[in-house]
Image (tube, rainbow, N blue to C red; front, side, top):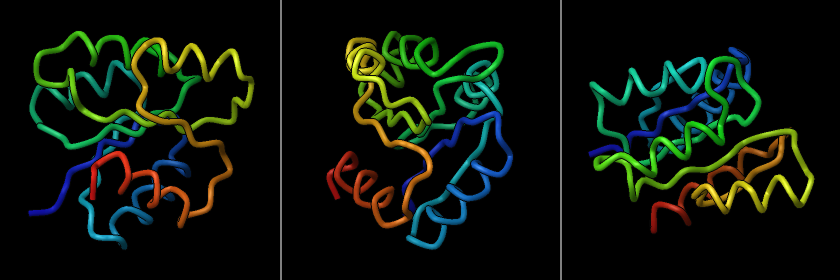
Length: 122
């Protein structure tokens, strides 16, 4: 059975690029446009991982990560933050709220897949 990964980003181009990369590498991708949309998707779907942007309207990546860490179904779900942010304080805040990893945009497909496999223990 394919591992399901939810991609959360307000950029349609980024969602599509990540989705194509994941799908080509044997994963099933789902998409959400921001953190609030992601929470709605997760009411209906169980996923193996979440890849989220940081800066989004309505509910940002930090807020989404906090919400997921407080949820019984998503408490242990790997969460990767995919962002243009490179500041070490931002990365530290990501770890503090429960992010499993951090990837900087623009990303190389091979590096994304390496992080995904590592986070999923595959």
